[in-house]
Length: 526
Image (tube, rainbow, N blue to C red; front, side, top):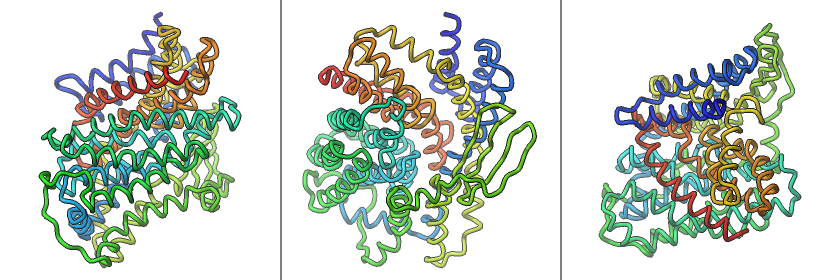
């Protein structure tokens, strides 16, 4: 019992510190919780000092991935801002539709859906949120909205990785894996209208606008999710990518022809006509980014494998710290950290940062003949000071809680939740998936961590295995909105200070709603 209480303690402490009345900022709360979890692993879970310290080093190094993504996104949008590209895009979107709800659905829903299918890594919210703020929407509300909407497509993520790789440990046949994919998509398709409306409610202050534009919201929602559902029956790689592309085109057409929209709801800015060439030039950072993401993520094109080459081109022994190597594709690796089997790896060119964000931002400055590269770098550097501390704390915290595999604190919590629910596990299964994403910031890692447990529970309780794994996959996507890494990323990009707890509390309400819908769907699919 003491071990179980100890496992829960850092989570409860983190939620308390970040959601209490005078809440702590993430850059203070996360390092403190990381310290507590570090001490628990040493003195309560009794892992050896070498393993715990190696996990500490690995956590600090793992923080490089979200740090690079956030810095890259800040760099890209600062480039768009100083060149005037964001202003041009804002004028064009106002020309498509003056309706604020339409603009939210175009950018935060359909466009972000497409980005998730191409990239993952929390990129959709990082790209969509600054565009909406540029359109005049309030930054804090936009952050909540974008985080909530970056869930439905996450089940398939970047070309299906959370499914075909995240569930690889379950050894399902291709036919059963496809069944998991279809059930996941079906649950998400049913939940999507509720999730979308809940997200919009945080931005749209006058709730009458939601009722007046409800037809457009529903049509736009299903424009993404119905192709997504149909594709899930035949493929696990492309539901989010193709569903997002079809949905974006249809949503733009719906908005252009004012289908399902009220004429009473005007966006914060008036429309200005934008010539086609000027629009293509201004939107180049966005469509160029999407194009680069797609080209570097689809395995059949061959570039993905080149960017992930891990064979060392240069090696260096760092003594007891480990063996460091760099591959031809700039994959950085540190093996045998503190003489343990713990390894760290960072794909410098594959993680969405240098490619596409910094690359596209730099090209934008060149195309607009803007000489502000140094000022953009300085702005990015100053914006990253607090996020770096918060993300290092977050990743150390995650590493500690997941240390030990089957004997980890997170695994112990999962088994406890399963034993409490018994035969009603199907209703609670999505929340275990969400717990995995809350910690790791990745639906793929949540599936890798908990899919085996979910499969074992389903077998023991004589529940339908593919349904339980579908609920795990949906839950892993659902947890994306409350993941501390993602919250810190969005608040950093939007320059919001000490607002992580505020966002977490409100997003948690939608997690509960989403989870209830998923659980009820799971009961129907047994």
